Image (cartoon, rainbow, N blue to C red):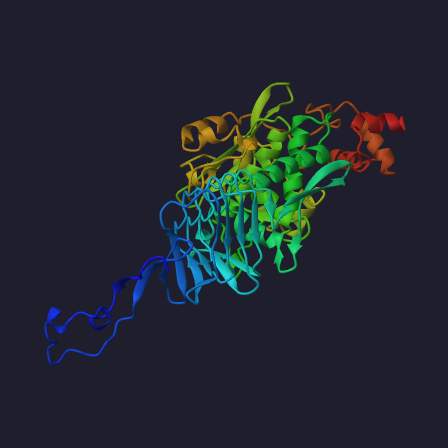
Amino acid sequence: MKHGKLLSILSAALLGLSAAAFPPAAPDESVGIVAKAEWIDVTDDNLVVTTNSTGLTIKGYNGTPPQAPLTIQSSYWNEPVTEIAANAFNGTNITSVYVPGSVTKIGSSAFNGCKKLVTAELAGTSGSCQVGNYAFYDCTKLKNIIMRKPTYTREGPSSKPWTRGVHVFTNCTSLTQINSANVIFYSSVSGYSKPRLKPTQYATNDIKNIIKTFFVRSQNVKFVDTYCTELCAWIRNTVTRSWMSDAVKVRQYHDWIYEHCYYEDCNGSGNNLETVADPENMLYSSVFLSYGLGIRGTDRGESVCAGIAKAFTMLAHASGLESYVISAVSSNDMGHAWNIVRLKDKSGQYRYYQCDVDADIETTSLLTNLEANLYLRNGILYFCCIRSDAQMDEVHPSYNKKVLRPDANCFRDIQGPGYAHPLLNYNYDYANNGAAQNALITQCNTTFVDSNYDGLLDGDWNFDGLRNQNDSRYYYAACWKMDRTSIPQNDMTYYLQKLVKVWDMSPEEVYQEWNYS
């Protein structure tokens, strides 16, 4: 030991003080009670430790830690090290850290702001370890996190699961590896490079589980931002084409989210217990990370309105479309988020329209069989896709599409400083300004004629954003290819759109290929 133990709570006998130092006990007072010793000491490697109910707690470094690796031993004086205290190494210049497998709890902000930290290894072969909120927050040089225990959990009470693991790795702007492996790998899908999340590195610890446990609630993490950015580019490349009008691109993004994202089911258990208000459902990464992790099945994720609205805006921005997230809390509602998007209307003028993908996803489950036959196109509902303010109130009256009170939590973190992905760059000036949001909504005054609810302007047979009812070339081409003498007017665009998807042609190319008139 470098120093003698600093005794803080001991009985008089343990301290060796004379009886004269204390008044004699009254006859009815208890005698013979020996208090348990609580002490602080400094190890040979200069760590300050104290006792806890299961072993030792590392309180920090005795003095200022050098800019060097930090290795914490599994025991000192034959006592196991079981905890790292909150703020223990906050803001220090350590370059790497090894936490032994004996540790069962890492306190909140334990390594917060360690800007020289490059590698953090949380080792061990058995048991579990609870990692506190903000534990590695703002470790801007952290590149590799190694978590070899079978189970790591997030800090937070079971009664408030949404508080667990908030921002454990937020602002880790260099983090690209988990368990010494690059988190993202790539494969060619539909002729374009698609980012994927590496499934596993160590048999005892699935990387996907680590991401699900710790990174769905952290922001400004390099591999998360890279994955979201490159996935948006892949989606843009695979579901849109240069010949498509802006409205068709909006429809395609509406379809992609609709087909790959369920509404949060809130049926988790234990450490994964979730609620609608979970921070992970509010983040820009919500839809994309859960999709990549296959949370609800292969290529299926989950979120709520806030995450869905942000994902839609990011996809729109990937195609250069102007889109905003609108968020509001009413007096009788926990809040809602949806989108405003700027498109060229039938007269060639740019107009604002509303789009609520979340409402379409939720409403689909409420349709009767008769309603489904009337409204579902290719299994997708378009009640709230490209609508004016009046149309939105008409088709989905359960939501009041006026901002009564802005929901700041939709735009900012539940806890911690705000951060937005670059693909959300149009949006966040409106976070606390309901008047500005309503100013956008009031511009949604142009009707998008879509009487059959297929997400396309009626009569827009060549998908150029203009009505061309008299141009029958595409109508007859679709009839011919579908081996039909006629197709109902309301279904024509749907069939042609299906053909375009299957053959990856523009409507004009479809027409020229068949040379049918």
